[in-house]
Length: 239
Image 1 (cartoon, rainbow, N blue to C red):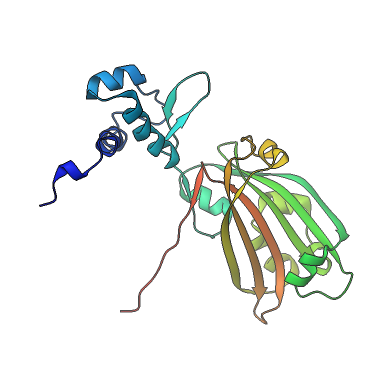
Image 2 (spheres, rainbow, N blue to C red; image 1 turned 120 degrees about the horizontal axis):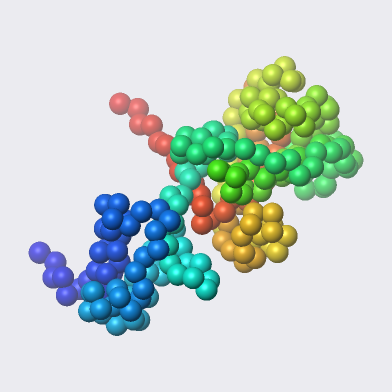
């Protein structure tokens, strides 16, 4: 049996604090006891306690509010790539989106290449914020070739997922999406849109969706708040 002496003291405290969250003794939104009280309860130094709390903050289980205290954080929303609003609803939360703009413009060179378009094409760009319980979670930019984009309206974009809307409005079938994720830091403007802090960690989700002929239909670049969501996948094994 492994000796408990090999387990760092801060990790033991971390597990004790985690137990209070898991059992519901500390509920979402609860302010946890002060560092002084916790140090006294567990007979540890402030440095050891802070390492335990810091670890839970990094995991998104606790959150610090400057000038106030530390609180039990809301559970992170699992993003399964079923459509952001569908993912939010599957976590039991109300989802809505705010359109920042939707307009036709010359297509940037990098988007032209990613969507395999002809030289100097026009494109519709959609910028929107997707919210969970009216809290900004995702800042998304979508690039749609003009032959598809001209058939979409702002009202449609507010009410319907692109994965459902484009096949209905454009009479095409979607086949697949190639998606990639990478960590990034929010700029000042991005943070402002997401009611977050500049430099905060986010997940950059880039996806190209294709029709049944493997022709790119639209490109999405989404910034997902790392403190409020996590990427989840489901793997099915053939038996």
